[in-house]
Every structure is written in structure tokens, then in C-alpha cells.
Image (cartoon, rainbow, N blue to C red; front, side, top):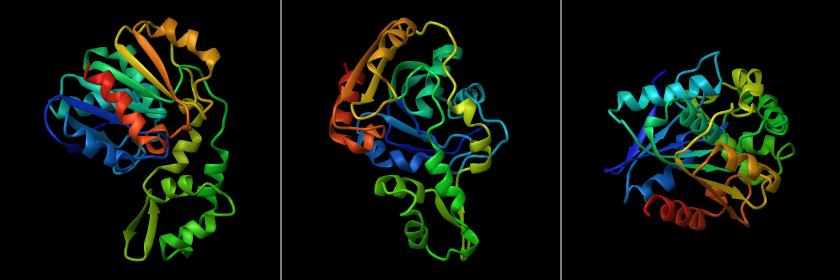
Length: 253
């Protein structure tokens, strides 16, 4: 599947893969800043944003989508950043088609499987009847009692678009994402990765715990893990300056 993409800047490619329920716009401010150093390519992953929808949603096909889309753009290799689900896609790409990767940065995603923990977001999305909505602000007000986190609500609201005059719709294929959630939460298969890798975790997040580090080191043989103490799962938006400094010091050395 060829993915929708946006580009900023020129030079060596830097490909950024967003997380679950996100899309390329979530990374646009970072892309504009990083475009001083790189040709930044932002993809909308399948069933997200402006990319095609499909009933198939697993890491093997999502990694293949990235490879196919890069080939279509004439990109043979580059540096990568992947956040959350995008980080797990990047890990699968490193296992299955590592020739595309020079250096890779995985943001707040481990190699282990995860229990279901998106139910509040799913409940919130499913509770909104868009047929009765005439303004985005109404959705925000409707979601407030369900999701108290303003940042999380705004993250979800960015997925709303005007399908036609007076008709709002979600950019994500929520039915398939819910149905395939077990695939999204699955562990990385066995196999050593030798690509130079930086794992960035949020100190307030539980996605990569101290007890997970040995297993990551054993699978990613040329890796380092750093912690941004005051950030949670959305490290890049919660601590943007420290995050940018960390990735550039890794990529430019």
C-alpha cells in the first residue's frame, strides 16, 4: 500500500512514523524544525490520516507499506523516528528490511506485548455520534466527562475533518483498529538488530520499564536508552526541546 505523505526540507531523508490514532500532522512542527537538517518525510500509516483503509492491520503489512512508499519516493535509505505503534513498525522494518535504515530512534515503545490499555479512548470515540454534531467544539464538550486530559482530547480532535458540508468524520478507521488491537499490542518477534538505535522513553510513562531494558539490549545489539524524566508517553510533545536535542545529538554525531 502506498501511503499519504508530507515532505519538508531537503538532503538526507529522515522518515517519521506516528503512533496509534495519530497521523502526520501530529509531527508537523517537529518536521519543520528538523527540515533545516534533513529531508523530512511524514507518513500517514494505513487506516490513519489520509492513507487508504484496509481490513488488514498488523506490523508486517505496515512495515511493508513503509518500504513500498519509500521505494515510490525514490528513497533507498535514511534515518527513522517511530513513536509508539510507529516505533514497533520501525522495529519490524529493522528485522525484515533493514537496508532502508541508517540510524533509528524508537520513542516510548518496548519490544514486549502490552495489555489492552486504550479502552478509555475507544469508549470516547465510540460514544460520539457525529450525525448530531455541527462543530468540533461540540465534540470537545461531549468528550470532557469521558476524557479529562485536555491534551489527549485535542490529539483525538485533530482526527476530525469535514467529509462534506456540515458532516464531520474521523480520519482513522476506528472499527478495524479496535478489531485488530491485539496485533497492535503484540510483541516484537525474535531476531537480532544491529542497526544503531536510540530508545527514548518518558520518565512518567510505563511503556519501557527498568526491567524491560535487558531484553531490549539483548535484541538491539547497538542500542542506547535515554529517559526524559518529566515526559509521559507523548515525549515529543511534552518535552519538545529536550526531545529535539536528544535526537539531533544522536543523528548528527
